[in-house]
Image 1 (cartoon, rainbow, N blue to C red):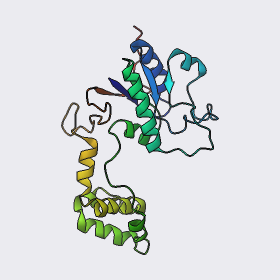
Image 2 (image 1 turned 90 degrees about the vertical axis):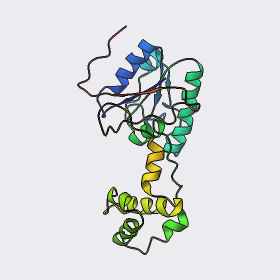
Image 3 (image 1 turned 30 degrees about the horizontal axis):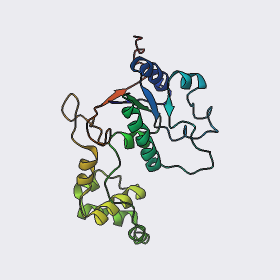
Image 4 (image 1 turned 180 degrees about the vertical axis):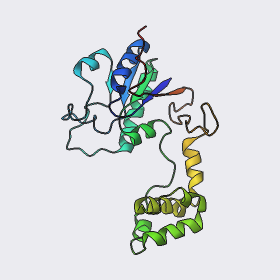
Length: 217
C-alpha cells in the first residue's frame, strides 16, 4: 500500500508523516520540489536530522542546488524509491508541498502528447483570442475548461488537441482514471501508478491544521 498525505503548507504534514510512519513501520517519499536540494534545509523546511534518524526519508537533500530538476525526473526517481520500499514489504508515505510533483506520483504522468516545438512556433503570430477561437472550434468542451486569457494554457491545450488528434477530455479521462470516494461527483481519483503491476492499494489523507493528532500505538 502507498499512502498519500496531502495538505496546505505549514499544516504539519511532515510531523504527521513521521508519526504515522513510526506507527506503520513505513518510509517517507518526499514530493517537494525544493527539498531535493542539499544546500537549503532551512529555506525548504526539510526534515530534521533527528526525524530522518527516526524514519527513512527519500528524495530529500539528494542533489546540489546548481543542478536543474523537474517533475518528470522527480517522478521516475521517486517511483524507483517506492518500488524498493514495497519490495522490502513496507508502506511508502508520499507527502510534500509541491502539488504538481504530488499529482505526478498519484494519478501518474499524463499520456497526452509531448510539446511540439514546430507546432508551438506556428502559434507565435496568432493572438490569444484567435488561438482560443480555434480551440473552441475543435474542442468546445475542452475550451470551456480553459482560461481564455491564459495564453500558456490556451497554447498547450490547442497543441494537445492538434498533436494528439483527440479532445482534452480523452486525455484527462485516461490520466485520472475512474472516480472514487463518497458522494456523487467526487474528485478523488484512484492512483494509476501506485504499483506497476496494479496490485497495491493507494489511500489519500487530507491533512489540515485542524486535523486531530496522530494517535500513538
